[in-house]
Image (cartoon, rainbow, N blue to C red; front, side, top):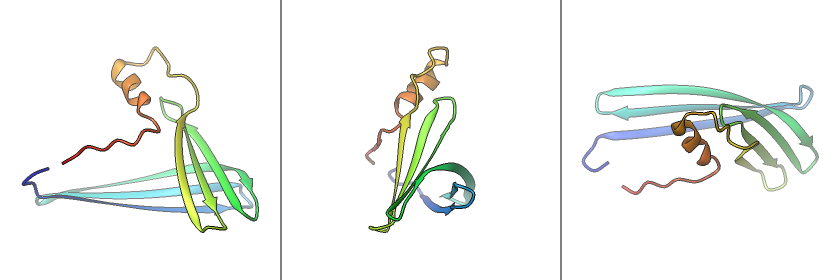
Length: 113
């Protein structure tokens, strides 16, 4: 935004518990515009699908779009990957705006300045 006084910062942490077969993803975002700010927080819970010496794979499905969120912890490379995809076809009974938003799942959107 040209000439604006706006900034945003996002923080994420992921953790897994083998005995519970769960992973959590905690997210906090702070957006500052001029003299005001907003703070939002979110937590997603993932069920572990696979846990080996090389990787942990956990997933959840949620929302009106039935989005499948997957976290993959590569224990060898020490990296975390996050993926999204629709888990089922878009419900035709949804409002047009919701259907349009569901079609964007898994796409990376770049809006140039």
